[in-house]
Image (cartoon, rainbow, N blue to C red; front, side):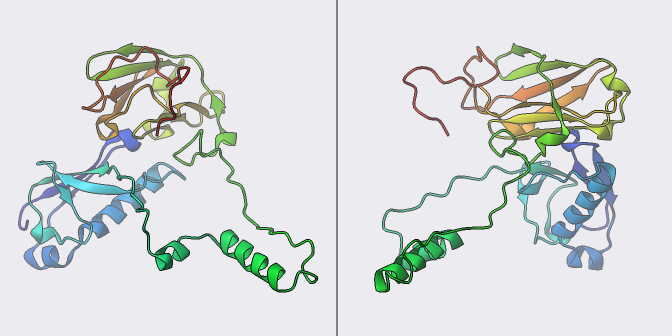
Length: 264
């Protein structure tokens, strides 16, 4: 794609929306990787949104919904509009007959240390009568189970009030907060995942930061299609349901019934 203006978009679901209109000559198009443009867009995002960064595993998609690899040159792309989206990662299946060398490579340092001490104990038990494994693993400042997006929960007060409306293909969540529409848009950040979301309100009128989140929604989400809107006194989330999971949501938060197996 050379000679005409092409547009690279960062949608508003990640923070303040950004658009890069770029026009390159033939030589520049052949030597510019898509990944360089993505990095520049991410740098501008961080400047506008403070310490927050884009979600991991993002990739550009053209208007035909085709993914664009970071190593692809601009000259080889098809389309005029490219939107940065978070991609879904499939869970890796580990076979039962995994090769011993691969299994050894996946062991943590603590596991290897434990095995080495156990071997030394067997060879010379008098030298290691009470050997114990000690690791210097530091706990995260946030609860990864409650915040899969890596948010430091100590900085935020939790919001509990909300209402929601279940529709066929989407769920609308209404979060009331007086005067939230007066805040700069970069102060409000929404993160969406396959089964979770969180809303961060920074530098609210009382000087505090607030957070409303769901660690496990009732059903799976098409999180790439989720959006949010800021009104005068509330934030509205539009949670797009996964195409394979259009069942009705009788609760916003997933609850486990008696006898129900653990879900992923």
